[in-house]
Length: 77
Image (cartoon, rainbow, N blue to C red):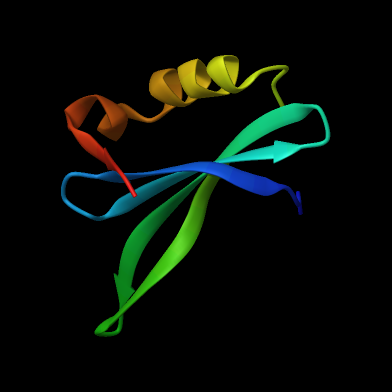
């Protein structure tokens, strides 16, 4: 499990996905959380954790390539 300091947080327009960008030492990575439902209960689960990148900008670009919902309207949370 990676541990870092969150530097940005974005949520999908439908509220069902969250992107969290973290800084760890001199690298950056992102984690995607998605809303899931099972047995009538709703919860959040980690659906993707990226590799580490040299800059925040590179981490953002990688997230855009890997997470299609980022292109459909997001809001900074």
